[in-house]
Image 1 (cartoon, one colour):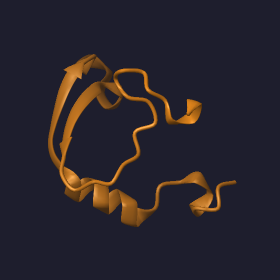
Image 2 (cartoon, helix red, strand yellow; image 1 turned 90 degrees about the vertical axis):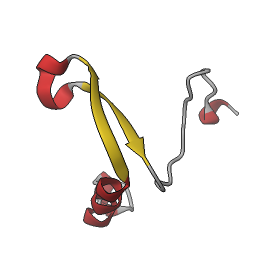
Image 3 (cartoon, helix red, strand yellow; image 1 turned 135 degrees about the horizontal axis):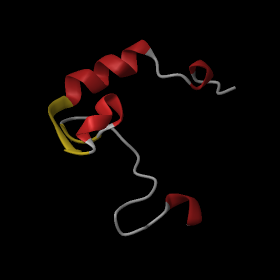
Image 4 (cartoon, one colour; image 1 turned 60 degrees about the vertical axis):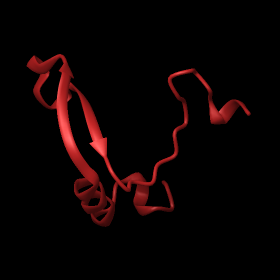
Length: 61
């Protein structure tokens, strides 16, 4: 179990994510509905990128 809410996303974090999303566009597999690949444009959302598009990995540092 994760000490931060049992590994679940808290309601506060869901609200922060919802407020940060400025646009959402389906870019692939639209027939999958909720599982489609989407491009999100976000603003003022704090994130940690674990693996970037150049395959840099914070776990291998």
